[in-house]
Image (cartoon, rainbow, N blue to C red; front, side, top):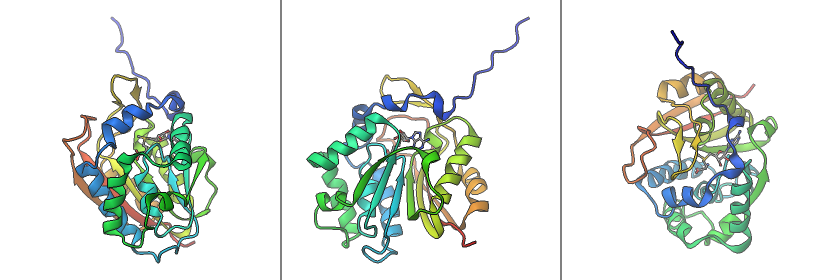
Length: 251
Ligand SMILES: C[S@@+](CC[C@H](N)C(=O)[O-])C[C@H]1O[C@@H](n2cnc3c(N)ncnc32)[C@H](O)[C@@H]1O
């Protein structure tokens, strides 16, 4: 008799993030505004509209990847947005976008963002001038460095290990000062996934109770809402998107 084979849980370090397929990822997700993006933009825009224009000295985008829209959304309230990213491929894309100008496909995202938040700078270029590309990962974050932090499709999309997912979320919370604010989006119940025909990337399926279990003890004012599954996107096995806002408690 043979014992059943146990599939090893793939952790964050087991994936080659430097080889992230930037072009395929953008083609699948961000060449046009999908309903999911419009929902996330509406949610995050309301978050940033709570602050005075330029009222946040320094904010974080954790695991920025090649997605420019969370960076633009922060540019009304934030005087400096740090786009923290470990992947060489994503860093090269971000640096290119900032140095040579954004691809045209990002303009409809900015048009929508400006409709929702007229305090955003006149041009996308001006908004992106507030962004600094910072190589590194969640383990490089200093305690309490930021006034606000944003994380989109990262903690649940980079490991199969729920303990590691929890540690990433904890680092995200600790990155803001006490009283600092958090905004995030998570794929709901997404298992490990492929981009195009490429390798399988590790993911940890999470639902609202899982987010409450992780963020509840670490934050105050936790609010979670949900977007329906977007069937205009490739089938990633998710059931929708969970949107979160919260605050790091004062000591
Ligand atoms: C699914 S992508 C999401 C990218 C982007 N935030 C977006 O909205 O499309 C996951 C991102 O997390 C990054 N990442 C992987 N491990 C990380 C870690 N330990 N800390 C921070 N970011 C990480 C990857 O390089 C990739 O850019």
